[in-house]
Length: 579
Ligand code: PEP
Ligand code: MG
Image 1 (cartoon, rainbow, N blue to C red):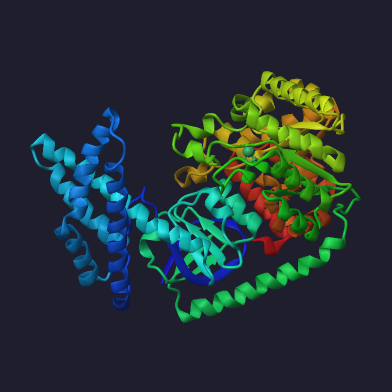
Image 2: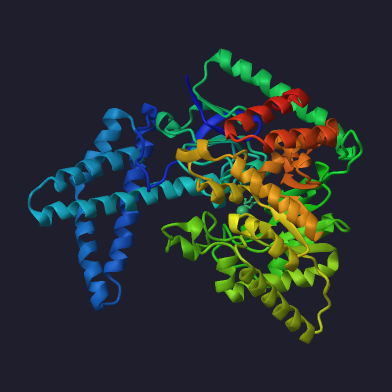
């Protein structure tokens, strides 16, 4: 039994067999198989070699030109290696003698050869090590690629274990079969974590080297409440967790009743509770959980998991589907937040050195006007269907906002020319998720109808801590005084400018922050759908006067640790189950 502590990012308990997704970009850990599976693994090696040889032979047969000539020479060397029977034998012998996976046998054998080459004094030979690593990647891609396809067609319950998952991969999981997620990498507000939460799949991230100790088919327990992953639990532990899982389900059932009750504090102040969604189909779930509209629709997920860009009609249908669920309630459509960890196919092949500081979000849209206008057309057309609002992400200065609004006006003029009806007074807002936007909120407020505070990015950019990097995850905290001061400033500026304000970052989904947010003056929150009942329970258990006192005390504190402890203690008194 191996118990590992990571970061809890999506609540719930799951117990199932592991399905490991390795990546050719990372070292493949040694994984054992049952002796009866050896022939299957050997056949997989043979298939991978055959596909790789076919692929390279095809390139060799391609049209002649100078560039191709150089590539041909390199691939000729690769082909010679791949056709070398003794190499294949070495790999299959390893599977036979040590009962390890095909991936491990390929990787271990080729790396050993590469290391051997790199030590040779002759530069020609030592440089061949690079070729060997290339061949390793090519073979692993084949082996792992099949596994990824298997995942798409999976038909039994599993816990997915991976070093790292992208939001795109996670969004493609079938939650009927993927019962839990455990990753070595990741942070609390990484987009992968957010997707897991919105799908309602229990998940733990930042487990360091958990993948290295797992073999395919091991039993795994995911405790998404406490951030624990257990491999090969003993019978007693399984029994304990089954009981705990039942308790958790009972709590969820208990909270179902709260759906019909209003989100009003004990002293009668109404709090508007909206849901965050990634896909239009999730809107139904928001309604089911008692949400009053959509405060953040992350539309970039329309772009992921597909080879081409969505058409205007596809955008329109997605927005129409959402607004159908919330006919007379607000639906805030955030324009594309592509870039950083959510990239389109073409970007995958041209990664940026610093993607979170690079061509992301509104910057990406302002440089890809055809794509941006396609989306704006669809949103504006859909604006007659209900209370649709438009929100621009990652604004860092007034000029960006002006540019985005100018393009929106262009789109409206186009629609005028086409005599298409739309809501001329559609509300326009921005996300406040950079320190620069927070510091200039009073200026930006003059150009918009509302602000929504994106605490995930605001925390990341204020503290200079990558929100998805487990190595610095202990430094990532929205309870940091610097983050809280910026939030307070934005709230005050929104009040002064008399514009609407909401919080849509994960802070609004975390029980310990709710009293503080209410005490700082927040009256609208948009949160992860599964958390709506629990957060409503907190809202209904507090008075604004208590919240104001808490906020006053917190804002006078100078240490994150002190603030976190204070907030956890205060919340535990109200909703002990949350801990
Ligand atoms: C945020 O940054 O807080 C936010 C809500 O946007 P996202 O998580 O999609 O970056
Ligand atoms: Mg953001």
